Length: 153
Image (cartoon, rainbow, N blue to C red; front, side):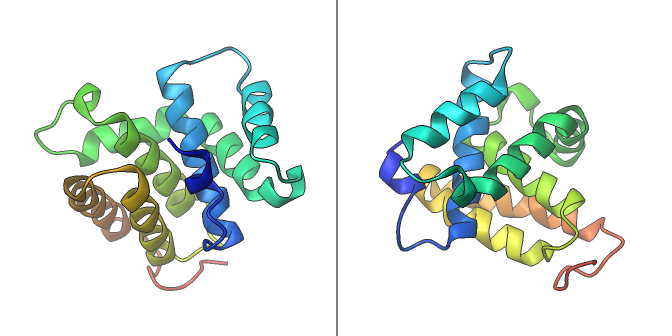
């Protein structure tokens, strides 16, 4: 992954934070370590911006790591006729970020999350992945007990 894509200056700060969280979760999946906080700090330090700029990325990664078993079980239930282990690692990372944000960040409308993840996927995934991600995330939104176009809080 190209570091410049994660910090694309054309992207909003929030999108850069989501992309950074995705990048970390993707890398962690490929090489899990015992101290993800240290690893996340190293990644963010390499991006050349102050830690405050990436505060939302820290929040996302902490939340995802805390809820990863729940998020992964949701993914397993939502993916029809597909083994969890066969999901492309980039798609898995994108799904983890999106599902965490949809389920636990009630201040963000779910449709915004889906749009953001699909935009990020254009840089890190294939066109087929976009369809896959959209299908899975639509199922998540359809199961929500809250409006998809408004924040819940």
